[in-house]
Image (cartoon, rainbow, N blue to C red):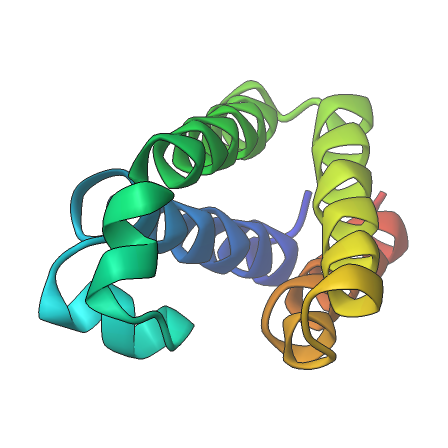
Length: 117
């Protein structure tokens, strides 16, 4: 892959690492509640579900890093596809903002990977 593709994939991985931290460790804290717009009671009641979501984001990070380190385009394409699907689903079911925050960066990285491929 090209340096540009690697950087974009790395940024998508970093973004999902941030989501992991927010969902697993900061969900009930002021920053986590502010980012997701949650009231303290809801955050407390849903913290186990959020931690589970965070764990899945960690799997996406692991896959994206694996793709970069191993220089296996198919691995990178697969995990970027997973991010895009998750972003589309989140945009359809939670907030359209997820399309821009999650799916769009992954789509840009995917295009860069395919062009470099």
